[in-house]
Image 1 (cartoon, one colour):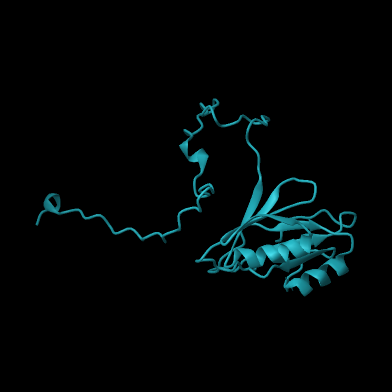
Image 2 (tube, rainbow, N blue to C red):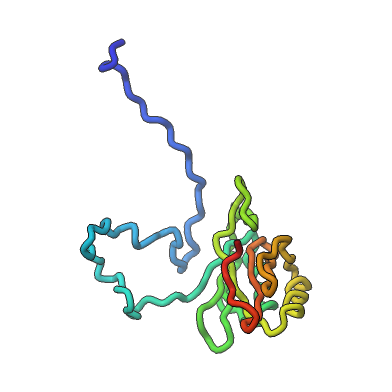
Length: 187
């Protein structure tokens, strides 16, 4: 058969894992509004009318950071007890905690295919995607409290005056006393 007559077949693409649709009344966190923007050409590219310009406060507000977990309620209880925050939304697969006096909340979402992150990073394993910095008054007392609630102290401690711990789902968080150190991301 000649090269011109060869039938070109599409290579099969790997299947992406199916994800659950978002809970009713919850935004679809998979949507990324910047995907619709045209590439930058040196001059400022046109922006959709509903996308704020840098410095605009407009109608955009970060209301929560979301952590996936195998059990949203269990992880929310851990952080509720650690931080002393109050629960707001409380559904079987979604819980939001609010700080005293208002501010950005911390939400937890049940993810059936959750994979515990590895910290520090190890090739071939799920890496951490984010960590939380938690200011405390006494590092030793706060570490003991976190461990009593179900956290583990990470084997690797990159700074003397910061304690890196892992929550019950494996998310790293840093406890620190502000006068002793400026927190930095786990290395």
